Image (cartoon, rainbow, N blue to C red; front, top):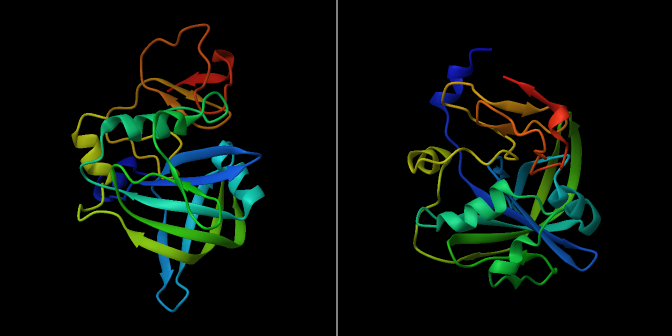
Length: 207
């Protein structure tokens, strides 16, 4: 496959979040898509199988998707896009709210939110594809949604757990053979652990 094809595509950035076992989980995704406009509206979503958020969604059966606004602070995207919910409580730095179904969501830096229930799911290899049904929705600000290209134009890399992982730059670094995370540097520290799945440096291969 010609990887330059991805340079022609762009995607929105969203925060997917769910609650399970008394904890809040969330991660950045870029694969949410509306499937039908008939009420209740249905959407599709892909989640990385190694994501703690994915496991929370499977347990809860409901989740929240918030549209990240174009003026969202970098701190929010970096916290939810580059760190693992297994290691830290990503919501601890912020002021989350909870929808009627118990799913957490943020309002700061977000343009809109949609609460969903899981209708069906399909094994897609490294990811699971979900069919979601809208429960409720709310516009949170007048700001437009953030896209992957806009995020990269700020000088940032695409969140590594995002299902559609676009690499527009030269391929350098080390790839985790467990979850696919790419460490974007020439040298990998011997004591390094994957921020997504916690795999040790021995599970990484040079690109």
